[in-house]
Length: 219
Image 1 (tube, rainbow, N blue to C red):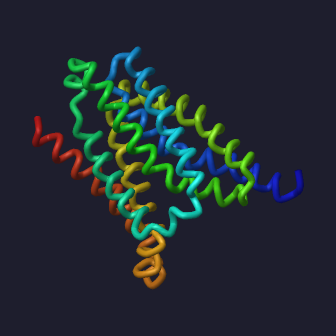
Image 2 (cartoon, rainbow, N blue to C red; image 1 turned 30 degrees about the vertical axis):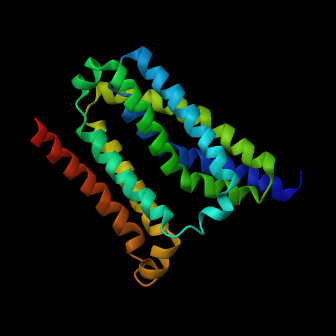
């Protein structure tokens, strides 16, 4: 219980509050069109499975940064998920409840694992190898994500335009993953520092524009 422990403890709380917000957004978007009962199931099952995978990721966090372009690949996957969530038709998901529930859970797991890369690495770094601090960080993220995603899902049903706000957040997060990738950062961002904010902003706009255009085309 030394100073370093308490500094890590406080840092993990702040990191979880900041970094778990985008996870809650993607879960809320994925589950928004399901009936209330199925929505709760999708959030509980999807988040629980993602948390188990997050524990495994945290265990190997020290090795994750050694995998070339891992964060960039995760960012590209997240871009695809963001566009997909914008273009989904709510009525279609409600009609096919069984398929909709499975699709929502699958989307939640994939997106949460991808978006957990920054969370996992940040928590592991703030904990300085302390197992109990790492465990605390993971446990803290569960209620933040579950409660936050339920609120977001309800709000998106009442205010449909929030879907585009959510997709912009996911696009921005994808951009952050890409520019923070060690290889991309070393090759491009170090020499052009403006890319650290320009790329996330550009991808946030791209997701909204592309998603809106594809949705209108589908209609």
